[in-house]
Image (cartoon, rainbow, N blue to C red; front, side, top):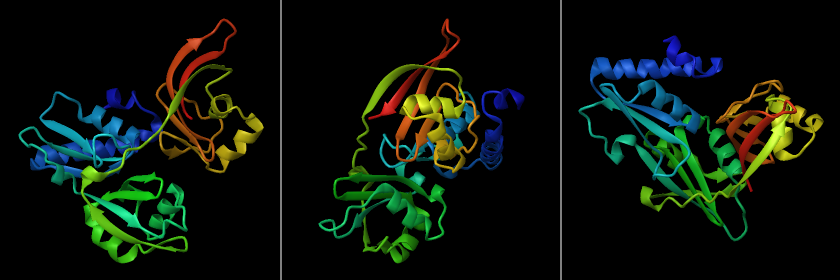
Length: 258
């Protein structure tokens, strides 16, 4: 057990325990287990905990091949998963696009106001006036009946095939930089080129996420592979921590959203 834990942060233990329970259930009942939508970090943990050389396998799907949020299907090795086993529904949101410009946070905020968990929704895709939403099929009928407005905009939902999910366009640029420490405030200050005095309140007010989870501690230590997002400044990923320079600074390689 400790061998598994040592590869992850302490705050991820609860989720690891949950994945171990899922694995045990599949082994004991010899039938598949479908999770809610997982962020990429959670998917990484599930893949690591399930492993590749066991009688239990795992597959992920979020609509099409390239999606951020996916459901995990954990299953016995005899089982052959099909797309329908993931229970995914894709909706296109119909609205007065000539007069209204919908944003991701507005769509998500309105969904959350219905009292549903974030884990019941996959990717929200917006491309010009096309707005799409992947959800767990078990809440599809509830959404059709209750999801009728975003802000003051009246909307309706049209169910379409998963193969019609519009692509996510995300341009990244690579940065090579040095920072005095791996503290969250220092790393974010360096990546986004804003002062620590400005970044610290953003962190303490819950506007910064590490691996899709809100982190409100300025001294949180960043690691190789962490994905950071700062509200209003975009997302970035630490692709490598290359050790220290002669001046005792940490050298980082970062992919940052343009």
